[in-house]
Amino acid sequence: MEGLSERELVERCAADERQYQELLYRKYAADMYKVCMMYAENKADASDILQESFIKVFKNIHRFRFEGSLRGWIRRTVVHTAINAYNKKQRDIQVVIPMSESGEVDASIDSIVGELEANDIIKLVNSLPQKAREVLKLYAIEGYKHKEIAALLGITEGTSKSQFSRAKKMLQTSIKTLHG
Image (tube, rainbow, N blue to C red; front, side):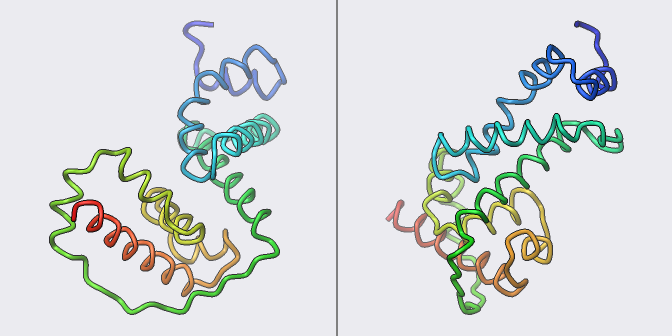
């Protein structure tokens, strides 16, 4: 299977050739699991999201048109699957957060953030309330616009902006507390 082009891999996966599906899975699963962990509350949920994501990938791989990277297409599928899993959990819960006042980033935060390890930052982000955490990740990490986030999460654009502002303020507070 060495020397196999991405196009051949996709075509063989689309033809339901299991050995090539396994090859694709092995190639991308570790990276995509990390994405799942950003959205899941625990490892079991992340594993479920990963599994469901790859089921969708293999079901829809015939739609991949090589207009972007395969990794990016798979990642987008994983993110959408994670959001759908979140929405299923939150279906009966509606939380409305009023718009918060806009605040400037404290200059001392920049110097403190430089001292933090990546794991510390991940822990701080994951300690945020669910909606704020999701909006922060979608906006700051995945690059979605607030309008897109609103559509994905079933909230208003204003709520998306509010949650993002809330997440930033909470992170600033947590970072200050962590470093006295």
